Length: 361
Ligand SMILES: NC(=O)CC[C@H](N)C(=O)O
Image (cartoon, rainbow, N blue to C red; front, side, top):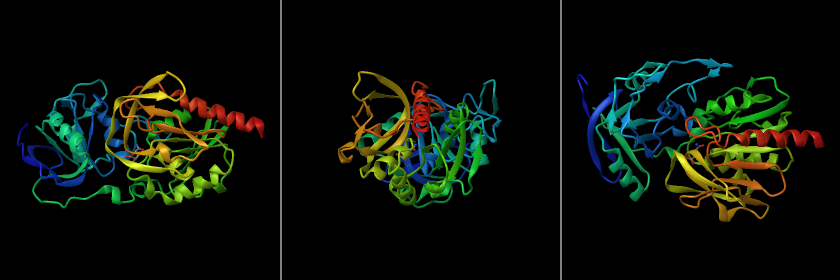
């Protein structure tokens, strides 16, 4: 690339890696996490759950299919997972400014520049991932001209930063679903709108218990789930009723906390499109899309709750369910975007539970 400027990636353990700048030539600090997904950077970079994180991609060449232009679907993005880039910085091995794809509108570097997000390339990201697997996810920074202090985003209420402030309505189906938006991926909204649903999207701390609805959905979102105290309190009220509840990722962690269980931080998290999970009580496994750094501690779940899915790599909890009421959640992403769509049927399972609840009323 012309006029290439050198930048550094510095980790809290003192590791310093020199590379070349792409995207914005600026410094940024965050939690350094890795993803082994082979594609999907337009989706990953706009997933609000990545807020505050410097993302390391192990796939060796990034940028070669460019970035699509925006298109709308029912007033939300048809392409991206939110309306902006949420990562704090991007670390890749080989960055391809040149790109070729039928819907590419710009290069990855130009897109990062639009949001003032720095990228660094020329980094052996597989070596770096081995360090992060060995020592755990670490704080770090990309340093261009001016130095910045290390900063732990998990100490911030990131959900409050990415959640909307207004209630929004979508669709006109027969099931009225409240979506508590802690930083939702738009494909969750698309998955609902492709079904028979009227969606009421509310801010993370909105008291949804006052609304008239048939089913409750808890979205994914960034940071430590324990920061979402108001959401947990409202959810506890909802758990006292019988209306179906479905949670994804952060939503699963909030369900665990509201039920009286605990969550903990994983050593280096699960971020990829090929995580195997086992459906409890069966021999059926699914390949799932994942992006999380925290998990529900299965041993702390009260007696009325049980693990619904288990991660086959490390045995951690990938979802929970209530033994008698229609409440369940997944730590993985049934809406994929990117990743396999094998578990999208869970949206249908949830809506079936909603229909049964309404029929029994
Ligand atoms: N994708 C998500 O919802 C992530 C949940 C939470 N922030 C975690 O890292 O575990």
